[in-house]
Length: 247
Image 1 (cartoon, rainbow, N blue to C red):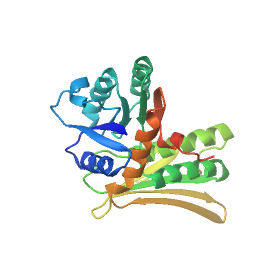
Image 2: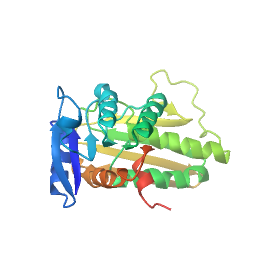
Image 3: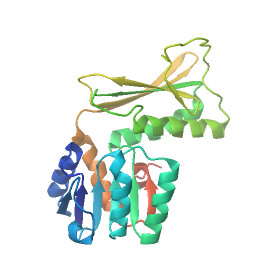
């Protein structure tokens, strides 16, 4: 049995994670912590792994405290920079613990990003559209940012130039943000949950990769997979795809 603690347990994602852990036959929920609760070996109650779904302003301190307390960590909070990732990687290695940080735990989203990387160098044009509910506080989403970054890296290595675009004026910024020469568009619309479209184009053809999450339950299989795998790692693993045999 893997003993699991949930940090951010009173939030919507934390509540779902707690329920998923309780329903997993190979896991035991031993602690539920939220804002204001101290994180240490005592409050973690013997946990092997802590799942952290809090808020960006708290996650850095939470992850450091969890690693200092001697547990492996699975993080679902987004907004990480390269500098912060390098810092917590060093802490995890020093502690001899595994740390998984993923921009998305939906298996369909992970696969969509992997498929997009396969197609990235084969098309002249590419754009990314992410669509979420209007209560989401950040834009673009961490998933869209990661998708565009990974596509851009593949295209750069392959020597593929930026997508053709003869736009000369766009005073309102309607062409969206630009990440790695890729235009990224964010939609906020009531009725949506979490969705992404990756559009590729060549003369005479188009490829659309679309992923849809309709409920937070879609993230739970990926979170549980992360809990099972992270105990066998040391240091930072960024992205759930590293725990999948996609090759």
